[in-house]
Length: 203
Image 1 (cartoon, rainbow, N blue to C red):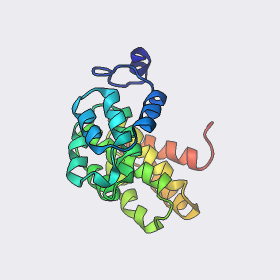
Image 2 (cartoon, helix red, strand yellow; image 1 turned 45 degrees about the horizontal axis):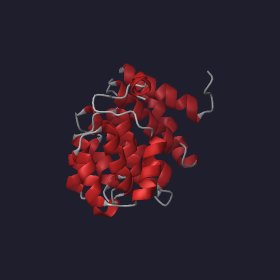
Image 3 (tube, rainbow, N blue to C red; image 1 turned 180 degrees about the vertical axis):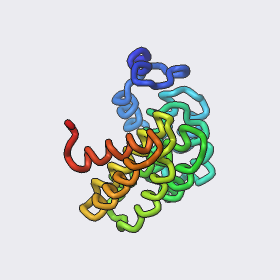
Image 4 (tube, rainbow, N blue to C red; image 1 turned 90 degrees about the vertical axis):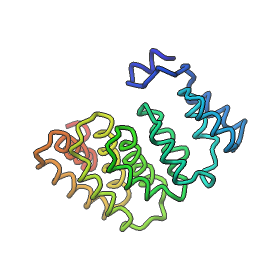
């Protein structure tokens, strides 16, 4: 419901309170329909936009369309759902992750780092070299103290580090660098990522 959503920091200005489970069930019934996805997105209703990300065709999503949708993101959960359901599955995902991570708009920037986290989890075939530019982007974005951005930066760093031992070592080195930063946000990101990657979640 809308009250529960608000407690989690979700923008409920245009929300109906429909559950993600309900939206997934509806998306399975509808199947992929890119024209419908565009119409749902144009409605500006929170849940309709999440549903749009579920029924959109990733191969029909142009780079320009992705930029347009990213500019209209207005809540962290919508951002993460669109990245997971749609953006990560497009041919433009890696390029947009790096590009958006340098943008000033809060949810566009979050989308960049959310995409990095999703790519790290889902794109098993990528070589380790694909994550070098992402680790650099994480370093450059770690001083952003906006809550929804710094949490996404942290998420991206942790997920990259969980891919394999070599990337874990690189992520831990980056976390150590961030812990020594003059930025409070960067220090928090580094300490939290290091704690999880070293298996010290309770400390």
